[in-house]
Image (cartoon, rainbow, N blue to C red; front, side):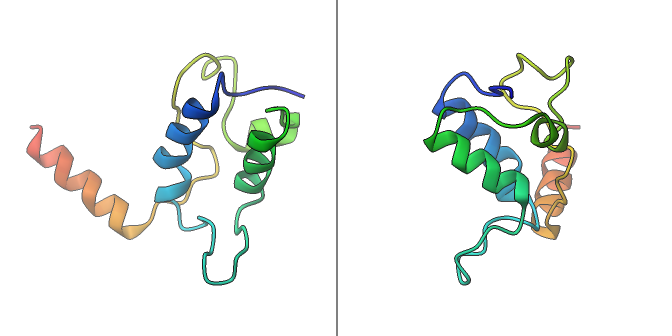
Length: 94
């Protein structure tokens, strides 16, 4: 078991940077999780903050990412909207 985030704000920022930009984000209409990793992180957030090693690997938590505030989830599948927004930002910063 591992605790990937120092506090709820860190978890919220990580979720906003990954889950909310992913095609597998929580389905509000059906009221269900589409991603087992987001579900596990949500449960951990209201529990003791710990996740299994399997979930940690699924979200890309490694020795290199540990200690970072936000890192790219290993299982994220970017939405087309986020890809377009990213490319627009990239072009504006060149």
